Each structure stands twice: as C-alpha cells, then as structure tokens.
Image (cartoon, rainbow, N blue to C red; front, side, top):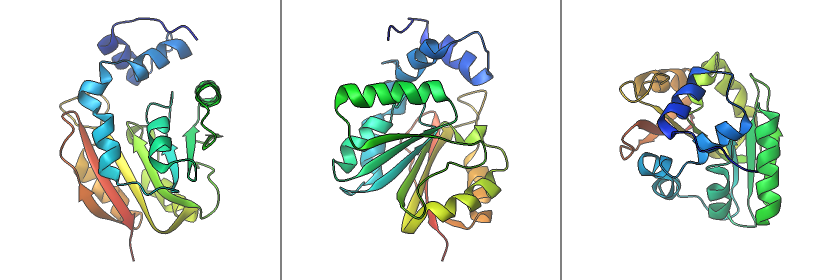
Length: 204
C-alpha cells in the first residue's frame, strides 16, 4: 500500500481531532512516520514491559500495528499478540503486514466500543498506547476487561500529557479510574516526553 507523505505534525493533529477527510492511508502515514520514534521511543517502551517469551498480549487500539509487531517480536513464536481495534480497515492492514512478515503469532480482533472481545481469561498483558482518551465509561470498560485476564496479568497504559497534545488523559485521572475499576498501580515510568506511561495489575 502506498502511503501519502503528509507533514506528520499536521496529520497527527487532524487524526486526533477526528477530521474525516483523512483516509486509511493517511492514518497509516501518521502512525508509522519515522518522526514518531523520536518521542514515542518504542524500543524503550517494549523493554520496560519486561515481556516473557510465550506471553499472550492484547494491543488495545492497535491501529496500523506500530506496537503490535514489536510486541510480537518480544513474546516470540510461542506467544500471541491480538491486535484489537474498532476499525476494520486498520485490521485488514495489520493482517496484510502479518502475512507479509510471516508473523503467525499475530491475530486481529474487531472490537466493540465497550468490549475488546478477547479470548476468555487468556491475556497476560493488555497494552494501550494513545487510545485511553478515546474510550467512553473507562472504569466500566476496564472492569469488563478483567474477564479476559489471567491471574497476575498487567495493563499498561500510555496516553498524552496535557501540555503535549489536544487529546490527553492526565496520569492522576488514569490512576483514579483504574483504581475504581479494581486495579493497582505497579509502576509509573517517566521516560516519554509527551506521554504518561503507567502499568497496573489486578487488585487483590
């Protein structure tokens, strides 16, 4: 698929503002732009997750698969990554990337807005980057997510800081909502210049 080369900062802003003039190719251009790596630091993010080989991972709001395939490399062929998105065209794009790259440990899931539709009680790690602010009724959403998690599972949330972007969720709000959903904060990682990075586990 040929990707349009629109200035990254403008395109990303337009996407998060919800402008509809941008098609799937434009979205992929934003999500996969080399400029993103400067502030997203994807290799550092994946390293911080300390993923065990064979882990079952859900990439919640996977988009073009920016993190999906990095997570798949981390968990290895004995693991599994579910690329979860409400956008069927993005899922088709990820399926194409997986087939082309020989990733047999990647599967897409067409989610509902209130349910990620994951395998029951099979997930070791839910990872969500820049998607948390899009969710409605987030406390209820993550209460529902518990049915998909193994004992000892973790939830990693990355979202924009207030000063970094128009759409954001401040860390204290994420903490409040996740604690209300029955999770406890395990780690807050302060390495990303534009984003909060929080890791939670199931309370009790």
